Length: 473
Image (cartoon, rainbow, N blue to C red):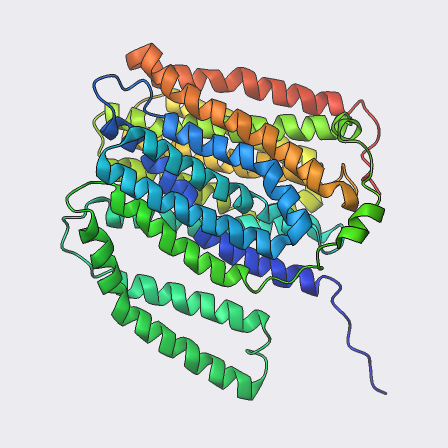
């Protein structure tokens, strides 16, 4: 008796989540490059007064905030795939402008480039919501985790790209060949897999042959591209690293081009569609309020501490390579737990995972206050990354329970507008705090963590006494 094979109801969601995770690995690499080097470039471009050194990083986050709602509305009208590809194009423009600004020594133009990069990053931040838009209720936290797990590769690719290109006078181009070849092969296999070419024998042979050929070409061409980019701005520091991020965005676009979502609604459908509840009513839900508070607390504090860390390390006598490696360990810790965070949320609940994230943020500041050795900086940044992961993914999962499908664009856009507006403020205040408190600036940054985490924990406690935890239907 034949049996009917089980149908995976999450098949399409898994396919898109895999592609979005791949795009996150490449497009998401722009963020660690911008943040790890933004403050250092600010110090490089400014004169004797370094008070505005972290302004470029703040403007990057402000670009994310200001573009969040327009990005969500744009994708609601023209579709997720077209929106994401457009966002990558904006990010490429930002990388080019930033590189040119560093070459010219123009601080204002560099800020414009960082703003454009942030606008492109607003689309990247929507990957997590796009993954959660499909699949059943149980798969949604996993989908968010899958996408953010791509960030662990961004954590490696971004800082290593910065270190590789930061000094254009270095003659070592050896890593470029395997670097480009690996990127082409990985992207090629994922695209072939989601297109169904890997599962069929005849198609599989052709696909593997094409991918291997492309990898060999990339292995040969890679050093020439890397040499051209590095020599283009020689001997100016930092400029080549920002231009290299444009190449990473191009790899991300290859993955984004394979996304498949429902067609965007026509003009007639939009006129007839039920737009759902007013935005104010959605935002007044206790669960929405607490999810935003915890997301802002985890993300803004992470940005506040992370932005100040490279500058504090420089003031303590450590090199740009040391601070960039510190950011790499931090970003790896941000995204590494994503491989299992979704399962932990399903097992223990969103609120408990967010609580653990807040406790880890407290541990980060405690370690940072215990000393200024390289070990203290690295351990604190790793704990900061773990705390962000649990706090932010848990809060994002809470948010997805507060709106209906027809309300997602405005709810997600409003959330990111608030979130990244305050993240930008945190980045800006990081430099101001370091400048205002001088030698005690790093301690002042870390003492600030305690009251904000306390407010987040109190909001979670308040939520327990509100309406039962029921998702909006």
